[in-house]
Each structure stands twice: as structure tokens, then as C-alpha cells.
Amino acid sequence: MNLLQQIWRSSLGKKYIMALSGAGMFLFVVGHLLGNLQFFLPPEAINRYGHFLKSTPEILWPARLGLLALVGLHIASAITLSGQNKAARPQGYASKAKPLDATLASRTMLFSGLIILAFIVYHLLHFTVLVEQVNFTGLSFEELYQPNNGEMDIYAMMVCGFSVWYVSLFYIVAIGLLCFHLGHGLASMFQSLGLRNHVWAPRIAAFARLASLLVFLGYISMPVSVLVFHHGQEYANRLKADIGGGGRTPAVKVLKGGAK
Amino acid sequence: MKVTLKVWRQKNATSAGELKTYTSPELNENMSFLEMLDVVNEELANKGEEPIAFDHDCREGICGTCSLVIDGKPHGPHHGVATCQTYMRSFKDGDEIIVEPWRAKPFPIIKDLVCDRKAFDRIQHAGGFISVRTGAAPDANSIPVPKEDADLAMDAAQCIGCGACVAACKNASAMLFVAAKVSHLGLMPQGQPERYRRVRAMVNQMDEEGFGNCTVTGSCEAACPKSISIDFIARMNRDYGVALLKGEPKKVAGGGAG
Image (tube, rainbow over all chains, first blue to last red; front, top):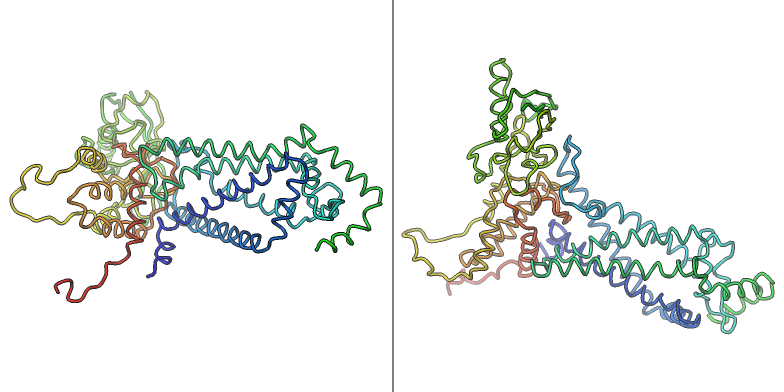
């Protein structure tokens, strides 16, 4: 039996896969956050960043496929493991006692994971595939382009997208669940890989709490700044007025075509 | 004091069971939980009813035979004690107590509160041993063992194999038991020759028995009558990973003889 088969077939092996794919996705979450925090710089910064990613397929596609593989492995092992877990106790207990010492996060990883998955699907439709029907702003994000070079206006897209309060609320709740998931997952990752002992256990626990809190604050800072502090509102209004005036709409396709 | 018991009654492995309610006779609060069941059984026997079957042996917390999930917690309300050392003074007069067997597919119920824990024996047979020469006892300290390793190995060796970890785990996982056995032997110099073969064999047997997987909730550690730490599970995970990476031993010509 080769190594990969052995890993997949064993309970501990699948936990290694859970841990490593989780670690990979956590690194993406941190990178994605750092990139997006350019939202707090002048609009050109994040627009340049977005254009760089989108126009560099040799980075974009390996990253996308790699992430897809990580998500796939994480979900496949989660479903297999939890199936085995359910099968291991066909009959439960009659007494409805509180589970011993187990945190809520540790008992609800599958549930929080599934909601995060639903959020990822929405997020991709919202900001990557740019499906007009799911942004609830009444305008197509594809029409938001920068007047000087015709490239996508990611800054305006974020301002407009987060101006819809229920969309922002969903983002905040989903990010909250992600960090709830990470609070348990980041610590368990070390346990599953065997990289934990009595010296490192408290440090790992502190890292998991701090990292998930920072990720939470970092991500919600964007919808909160738009909703509460009207960050970038002026910029977006100016742009929307231009589009509404009809002066620019016909030019969109020409400019976009030119940019390609 | 008197208590009301709701006890799982099941005639045999194949029949369906149910919770039955019994009122205890007058009890002494310093009786152990098992002695309370003895008294209830005596009354049942006098009435011509089938006594409640439950596992017990040493009754001093060292053999790992007693079980019972008492009000949802394996071994009763206290930390670090087995059912035999749980006393009726931990309950109040008139309490209703639900008593159930360990629930896990690899621990099928034999009768009432007695379940078959041979799955643990099979895991032990797979690798929970060391090979030593027999004969006269070796000189004390002829093999140096660092004190901290000896202490840690002793912590793991406290496992009495009762199965409370499986009973408490929401996934019916046996990881704490297997981790304790793997760590206990793997920490000692005498356990080194078979260290990686052992962890592979024991984990594979554990998987074969159909136990669940660890989701690091910590319930096992909380239920363990010997308070064995889940740090040992990390140690097992580490050893198993190393064992997988090492792979099968290299085949050599002549079995290594030439």
C-alpha cells in the first residue's frame, strides 16, 4: 500500500489531511485579508492589486486550483470522518447532559464549516463571477470601471457591495463563524499533526484565539467602515452619478475591450 | 436517603432494551454507587425479578472493570474517579439518576449495563506490549531512564482501560486509550525497538474496530478516571506520522544475516 493510500485510509491520516488543508486555507485567509486591507489606501492601490492578480493568469489559476483542491480535501475528509463518527455510536444516551468540557466551537465544526462553504459560494458569485442579481445594489459591478484606464474598479465595487446592509451583515456573520471555526481549528491542527505538548499547548491556544480575533477584526473592518463610517461613499456616488447620467455607459464595452 | 433509578435493561445482545424505573430501598449515603446497585439488586432478587447486570471487580478504582454512564457522565459526577469510588453522598435524597451502559458500536451490549470491551484487548494484542528476555529480574537502574520520561510514562500507564474515554467522546473515539498505551511504552527505553511498529499496529486495529475519530473536544480527558491528558493523543499522532513516513522496513537478503 502506498503512502497516500495509507494516509487516506487511516483515521489519523485523514486528520493530517484536515490539518494541512486547513493550514493552507488559513494562510490564504491571511493573505487575502492583507491584500484587501489596501481598501483603506487610496482607490488606486487596491485597483492596481486587483488588476495585477486578474491579469496574471500564471499566478491566478494555480492559486485558484490549489485552493479548490484544499477545499475539496478538507470537505472530503470532514464528511468521511464525521460519517465514521456517527456510525461509531448508533445509539445515543438518554440523559441530555452537557458534553463534558467540550467547547461549543469544538462540537459544531461541521455546522460552522457548512455555513462558511455557503458563504464562500455567495462571495464568489458576488465579487468574482459578478452576478448582478446577488449584489442587491441594482447595478452591475461589471459596469464599474476606472475612467482613466478602463480597468475594473474594485474599490467602488467594495463600497457599493457593502453599502447594502443585509449583504454586509451576512459577511460579518459569516466571518464571525469562520473565526469561531478557526478558534478551534487552529489549535486542533497542531494536535492532529502531533505538534503539541504541555509546553506548547498554552501557546498554541493563545495563538488560535489571537489569530482568529485578528482575522475577524481585519475582515469586518471593511463592511463596518462602509456601513458605519461611510468609507469611500463620495467616490462611489460620483461614479454612480456618471453611470446614471448615461454619459459613460456606452463607452464601457469599448474601454473594456481596449483593456483586454 | 432514597433515590429513583432509571436503568437501561436489555435482556441480551440481540434484544431491544429500554429504561426502567426503580426506587431504591433506604440507602446509607456512604455506600458506593455499586453498593447501592447491590442493595437494589438484592431487593429485586427477593421479589423474584431479574437483578440488574453491571460490571465490577476490584471496587478500588484500579481494575477498570466498572463502567456506567451516570446522568450522562461516565463514572458519575466527579473528576478522576471510577464508578466504584463514586459515593451516594454525591447525590441528594430523592434524586432521579439515569444509569446507562457505555454507548459505542465497538462495545456491543451483552446484557443491561454490561458491554463487551474486547475491542480494547484486540488493540492491545496488536502492539501494546514489549518483547523482553525472561529470567531473573534485571538490576535496578541498569537501563537509565530520565526522571521526566518515567513520570510521563507513569501518567500514561495509569490507564486502566475502562473505556470511559470512548463513552464520553461525542464520536465514540478510542484515541485517548490508544494514545495512553502507545505513549506509556513509547516513552521507555524498553519500548523503543517496537515503537513505530506498535503505533501503526494499534492505530490500524483501532480503526478496524470502528471507533470514531478525535475532534479534540477534550471530553475524554474530563471523563477519564485517571485524568489522562490529551497531550498523549498528540504524541500518538506524531509517532504515527513518523511511522508512516518511515514506511515498511527494507527487505534485506538473508534476513539480515549476511
